[in-house]
Length: 219
Image (spheres, rainbow, N blue to C red):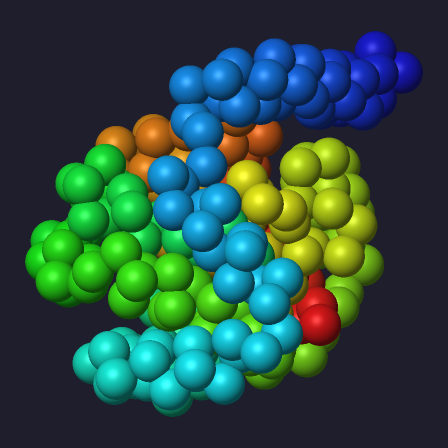
């Protein structure tokens, strides 16, 4: 009986502690990590329905070099490269800014994003956000769903579509998700965000596989 209690209660306590950290850290992140300075300009364009055709044309003039990895419309052609299609435009614009400023580290991406003008960044974010993502998987297994509800749904929403400050995970590439979650869990330094390290702490590799398989299958 004691063994059963330890087995059931300990993980529950760990999840509760993770959620407490998530709540406080998310509030702090809202203060220290504001939206992109370009976010207001982008939202004005989004509100102007007549601007959409021009945005697509302008975006395609610079996204051709993204197609090789991220796919022509943002559904990636590589399992370890993220889908950009369907991502929240505010979140996507912020990540482009981070790469351009060296605040998110990946040498290849940093170099490419620095080449984009402010208008390019806005157009690219809107273009990819307005495309429909093709789910990378097809297995919405119960083990993965249970893990998602316990550890991720608070921030990434029940649908996995995220928000302006939280990325869409639904339909995302399996190996990209696996690599990202493992890095947060192991605190390797490539991705540093304490709420994610807290929520992924204690996951074993089999659980990560179940989680990413479920997420990749969501629409």
